[in-house]
Amino acid sequence: MGSSRLAGLLIFIPVLAVALVPALGRAQDLPLFDAHLHYNRPDWAVYSPEAALALLDQAGVRWAMLSSTPDEGTIGLYEKAPDRIVPVLRPYRSPADQGTWTQDPSILPYVEQRLPRGIYRGIGEFHLSADQTGSPVVRGFAALAARQGLFVYAHTDDVGVEALLRLEAGLQVLWAHAGMSAAPAVIGRLLDRHPRLLVELSLRDPAAGGRLEPAWRDLFLRHPDRFLVGSDTWVTSRWGSLPAIHAENRRWLAQLPREIAEQIAYQNAQRLTGRR
Image 1 (cartoon, rainbow, N blue to C red):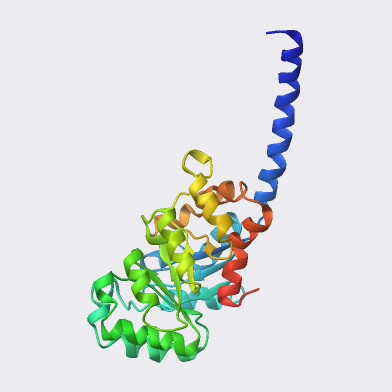
Image 2: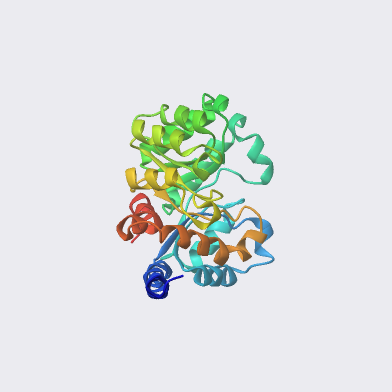
């Protein structure tokens, strides 16, 4: 290697390092709004409310959207940190409700009885298949949410989320896990068609191998106001993983323009929930 080429390489390496460090530093100071947390009954014996909130601190999560089975978990954590926890009302009184709620006529009254607390910003997260969207319970949820200005938080596929959006004019839907397996092109088409759809990204990896994939990057640039980050503490062990989960989120957020990263990291969730 010639001396001039070697000199150029030696200059390039520290310049590259200097360029990367500020981007990583900016990602570390980015506030996060975790849009997908559960504090379910099995968690209570392992993590006290104080311990759960300490894990949010460690993960750099300033606000969190929380639903739980049963709802008492959400209430308990909200009462410890009402300025930080945004309650969402899950329709599951026990884990058994997950598979039966759409056909259970007692579920809608249960939700209606709890909503007057006045603390909930949405209904969910609930699991839903496309063929269940026509049930009276699901239709009742959609009408109730639209009437009260609440969003519904649905774990479903692209067919199910579109069917749900069509139930009520003005219904706002938060789509859990970006459909779990929906491709960016499918998500993009739905966002183009449905202005009241928002997409939550827990359990998705838009940066396979550490580098933000071009299809995801293009989608975030096209719809920066429609995405939220989350973790999904669906089992107790996920609570201990919160710092690592959000470290990964920060890594790919750092690869976006700062103003777009801020929208996805916390501003879109703030707008949805009215929390500042």
